[in-house]
Image (cartoon, rainbow, N blue to C red; front, side):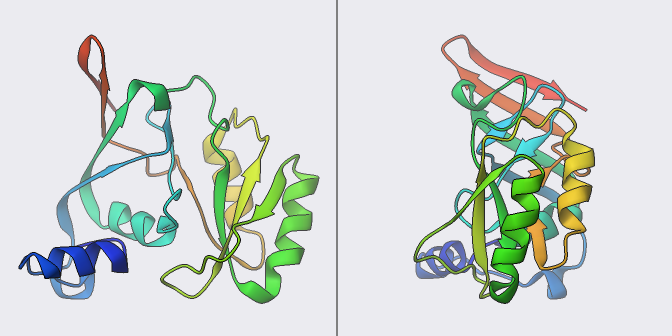
Length: 170
């Protein structure tokens, strides 16, 4: 199971069988990285553009292990721009709503998701309540998914640094 077409293609090229979530059912384990993480195991994902598929795989998994280096561990999410996948015809509408929420949305130029949608990268948000913001943005008409993983954050966060590996658990 892979969350992006590019990863699936690479796996297949090396001879690894890739199965569809529709064929596998629930998963016991999902392992992936993040663009930003907090000690409370909330994450920003989607820098590579696969946030919707990553969120689907996380939701289908009993356990989610996230691996980051210590430069991605923050007290408050938002240093990394928050990816929001939008239906193309609603891009401007969603961007205006995100601006009212205090963000500065920028279209990710020349990029389409594996779902055929666009990404708005929202800069300058201080995400003090990630669960609440994830729900608010998710309810905007035209939003497919938001790159906040707070309602279903990591179960285990492995943080690599000069002092070794730090394990944070839910």
